[in-house]
Image (tube, rainbow over all chains, first blue to last red; front, side, top):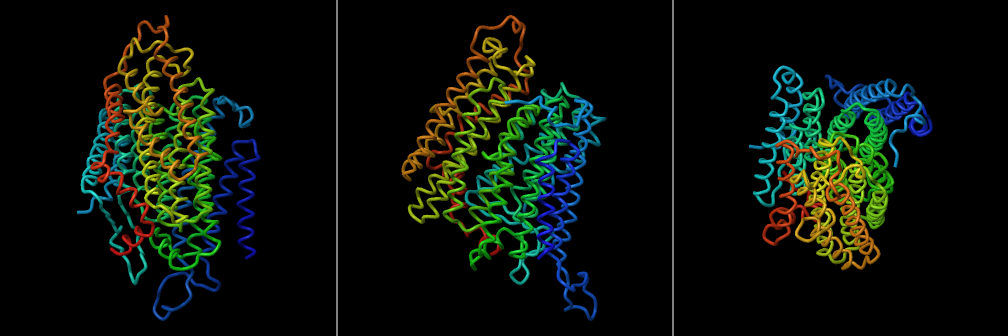
Length: 112
Length: 509
């Protein structure tokens, strides 16, 4: 149970980073932390205590396996996360070139 | 033959081929994108002509083994084919419009590749019958749209795209967390299977938590009111055909459609959640229109009206949910949902058209501030005509489609004795009318300014797709006539009203 609480804490740390920090790069790091916490949660959902890797071999058909489906989902989620982070960083670099700063307080062309 | 996978395969293939071939052969990107969209539109119309129907495609042939669905299911029913029609038809109009519009940007092939990917993602969300699959396609559509918002790489476009991405990222994490908890509680992600499990045993409190996460996640994608702050920036900064796609289609396909599907066909209907959904809808309707009043930028004004109009859709559907949860007067509930779905369909058309006309004005004048533009009605006749048609549709002037859907929603609210809600619905409609009178007067009907004496009408592809959509604004009113209604709108309402039927249909095959 304590692992789940830590997982939620990690999610909240990420959310704090996104909501409070003013530096674009720190916001991106916050988003990444949120994503890792969700991935960790998915892995925990599939985890079985004393389970082995889910490969059926002779003599081990009825062994206790960990659930492979969340692992497959986490792989997909990691790939998607890489794409989002890459795009975010690309946009952040472009913003730095145009504005000369990473501070979101100074990046405010849009109003109203 | 089962054609369902083509909805994802063809645009995805186009998205891969275009950047490879398009740099050498200039006409390929636009041609390929529009051909794919034309084909998919025709396919959807053929589906619609079949009447009430239900189709399941099992990816890789993995069906149901010992009562457990092991593979990914793609499902098209009456509701999803309606949203598929919106995606592909508005996509086709925006794609044709882009042929002329996109000439002023470099990197035409990248634009059309991203456009095709966005279509593939939206089609994928609409046809998938599996929660994690919905998440994957949703991210494809969302990432493509983030890149398209920043396509012009000017200051404000980059800023809007960053804002959109951060909020979109948070919503995706909420959705993924919800999916993880669903898998924890039910050991399955198939919507039909989760639904049948929820109906057969007492689910406990965990369902409320999952519902809250999904409502936050998809509500952020659909820009409902507490989560709306990204929409005006993102939708007004994107290139105009993309604004039309974002406002007309994206918020419906990856936000509203999934909310409808999950809250009717997956979760058991409860009074509390329906009340929350109705409240969110009413708030979006009212706050969106009040934020729109003070705007002078054409595209920002339209973007704020998108929030308000989506509020109408959610209010209609939420009232239907409330009536279902009370268990009284199901025909009235069906009537309210009919209004909501019809407004969803109409909003896609007229809001798409409004953004295209705003793009046409911006294409010729380079400006978006109404106070600096004026009198274009004397020079740009076709743009003015189509903008007028769309404005009348959104404001609810009788022969146009927006009037009928708003009327149905308001009558349904009155009949259900939600007097406050119906009062606000009428009030918001009046404010919408005044706001679009302002748009028409300042942009098209004042005295022609000196700067615009030499201005010309927009190129052929832009005007023709605008006129086509203006015609659609009139023609779709006919969908409400008894006889035509039973073929298109009523099956979609029935698919929602028969709550558990979806899972029986999917699992029974």
